[in-house]
Image (cartoon, rainbow over all chains, first blue to last red; front, side, top):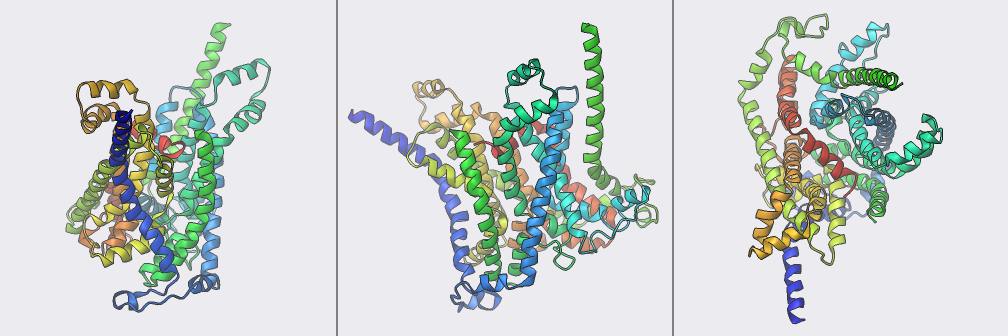
Length: 296
Length: 281
């Protein structure tokens, strides 16, 4: 009996030896900055007092200033428009492609893999590419001209720049959504479809009565994960438009960066980051609850 | 009758293949676009007519990049970023995944929650506080700075992706190792790691790519151009090349090349990992 407990104590110790280094690393490299960020957002740290010290506690002033600032409200609006537009297109087109590639045919495997190339490319290069093909005499306007449409100056107009950024992001997001949704489709048993076919259900009925209900879980998790990954966008805007023209493609990520590292208003930058965190936190909570349910 | 359905099947197969090829063409066209521009001459780049392929094929834009000292240093830094991120991730992430997959300990659900959450945290959130902390402890501007930050997202990914692999190893394998007199560390290295080889390859590739693709940490923590990887020096070269898109696209193509090579040769590991790391734990 004694031996048993000492054995399990040893096992516990062993387990901690494997787990704790990574855990402590995360606490130091992510956890501490996260807490520090809250502290920072309640003070007035900028380039003047960074080295000398002398920054003071100013409560919620950074937040009050932010929400009173028209640029920040525009940034919030851009972030939500960008995220929701991307989610809608990525998800619906990704779902359509998932249904298509889920069928078995000779090229389904290889082509499905090929489509993922755009997802693997560094976002900064996607930004470069976007800057090129949406330039005034670029590929997009050249193609539009071929069908008789005079394309706008995509990245110069405040009304079209965000659309161009959204299109580039969808190019990356569609294959990713497709991949995750295919794995959801794979988990539906074939027997269900077969018995439905025997019962005389056509493909629309099969889709609305079998696929959709059974895919509810993975559809929700793909959407939430999509939100979490899209809402934090930075690289694409930073390279493709630098947030411009006139902040029309500025999102929370780029705005926070700009405040902290081009204007050196660190506390304001971290207050913006806190707003970003708050939005992600709400969706993240739902996501975690969902996958906890799936785990049971 | 049977032949009829066979014919119908074949026709459907052909139709699907054609649609698939068209889709692949549309999705890969931007990549082709970048590559073809990178082989165009200056004259063609600045020409009035937009051509869809290089009329006079030239390596000059590639050479402009490859003969630039800052470019070569940036290329080296990109590799350093990738390999260091991979190293830290393997060193810490793999043992943690093993510990969480094979042992039942108190608090394991807390560990899992922390890893899941930290995988979702964006760089923008921790960027400012990290910068100030690293500034205080004099850790800015080293080759390790960005990888340390990037690995904080790669480690949780490794834990979440690998844990199920370790979990699925039969218990008999532990016992066999123990009977052979292996200590738990030796059993981990010589029995467990080989058993999850596929998962490890996934982590190797994805963590390397995380380091290679990073922009925001690398450009924030390294002010010096010679310390920055390719991603973080895009602006510098864009300013230098102006509207010489052929040179910019050669830059982009070189930056993408390792990603595409890894993808071509290790596709199944990458795809498997993306699904495992994203949907389930």
